[in-house]
Image: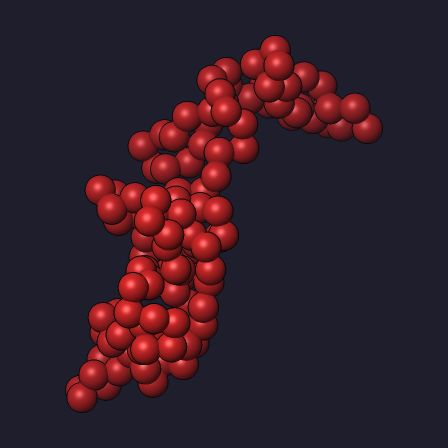
Length: 123
């Protein structure tokens, strides 16, 4: 099965759709993303916008989730930021503005967006 993300006009993922690999195959048995997109457009409308995604992250960084953003510049899906203060690193992973302290033993940390600091997790 192949997985595709439908994008709105702002490149936000609004739907994930699965299609049989058959719909991507060319006459030589090779997969062709464009064929998969044409098939999805035939099902959901010519004005829909699709990008292939994969569970194992082989293409476009991450498996797309509803609400994620597709970056044409990076040709990658970017997950939603967990907190407004976090920024993307060079691997398109969200990072806190303050490095997370090491967890030792039963001590764990949770992010406090109000103080922009890591705090001991209450268990």
